[in-house]
Amino acid sequence: MMLEARQLAAGYGLARVLSGLDLQLRAGEVVALLGRNGAGKSTTLKALMGVVPVASGEVTFAGRRVERLASWRIARLGLAYVPEDRRIFTDLSVMENLEAGRLPRREGAMHWSVERLFELFPNLGRMRDRRGGSMSGGEQQMLSIARSLMGNPLALLLDEPSEGLAPVIVDGMARTILELKREGLCVLLAEQNLRFARRVADRACILETGQLRYSGTMAELDADPALRERHLAV
Image: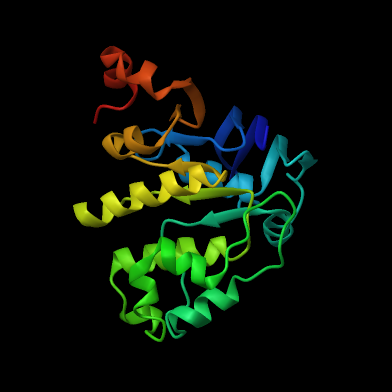
């Protein structure tokens, strides 16, 4: 087990968003965190990463309890996080953004060099000196993921990776996630696009009002239209 949450409760100030959440992510696995708007998907990723304080419960990453650690310490342990708004450095070039994410080699994790990242994201290799603020949304999303990989993570949290992107870019994003899985990286992605999740995820977890309502294989979810209608239909 690479990442596990037990009875996780978290929120913003007095507002409790997550309650009694149990979640597991195994090495080399892609899990899609599904749910309607406001279900708690983004808050779950932020709580796992230490961006949102955990009120109660446990978070274990790579065999270590991390729910009371600062987010930068969790990142140093090998958990990477790509937020929905990407948060690249808009005044820095592609190369400078990548260097900002560089961490030393990590035992048990794939080592990501700039050259290897440009093989994964050829478009970035053709715009090494371009400022982040002059890139398209899809290019910024690629840069944000590439920057996170410069930390040689063991696991990757992706918040709405397909949102607002053109279909051709979404296709490329799906291929990228599958390639990361082949490299042994485990990925937890918060997503509303069920079609995209089907392409990349081994398992699905459905949140509703901050609680886990379903956990199973993507094939099992596909085979149960009533379940999808009950928890995912708008």
